[in-house]
Image 1 (cartoon, each protein chain N blue to C red):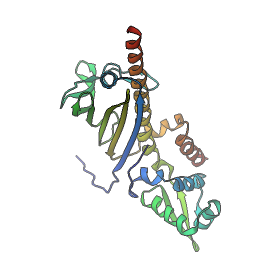
Image 2 (cartoon, chains in turn red, blue; image 1 turned 45 degrees about the vertical axis):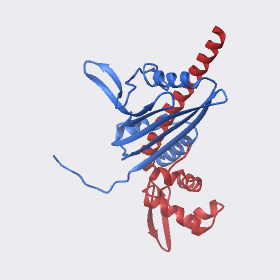
Image 3 (cartoon, each protein chain N blue to C red; image 1 turned 120 degrees about the horizontal axis):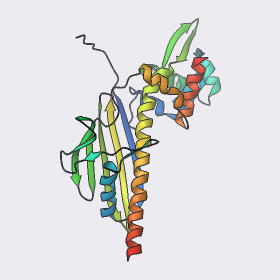
Length: 115
Length: 153
């Protein structure tokens, strides 16, 4: 499945594998400092900060200040409508196209059998 | 009537599927029309017959009788047996619009189907959506379900 690219769109923001990895880390619902996220992934702090910034822009995470640290927290409810939207259509079309293939190929076999 | 103006994100979606079908292009096109129409099914719940008026501007809708029903879209373009293109709101109750295309090409005795669904919509959460959360399973679903479980603790 291909997706259009825009960082102002939640769907596209979470389609990026590294951002999904970061979402997975934040999924415990706790506040995470950037450096603690960096320690969990195999990418540098500037890249992690950039990904968190994208997630912040689309409302998937919030940020608060604690001492010298910016603490990030996941807002899972932002993901729910996106998930439903994509999943509903994917289920429907996968089912439909599977049936179209199956029925059309059966028609071809029936024609061969009829000579 | 209260009117709320706000800055809302418009979400976009693109689903692309390609399939090789061992059948003639005419039979595949005929099958697409059948399956979008009287043969339509909802995954998991079975038969959900639709009416597809297969001409430009024709409606694609669910007729529930007594004036009730659900409009899914209009035929934007149709070129038998190569293309059927539909635009409309489809089946989810979000303010949005979709463009769906089935493009067919016959090659070496096979028919290649290229399916695209592009959409843009304003999505939102409500209480019912939140209740449905627990039914999620598999793939992407696992990640998001795990997120939800963790946040409920």
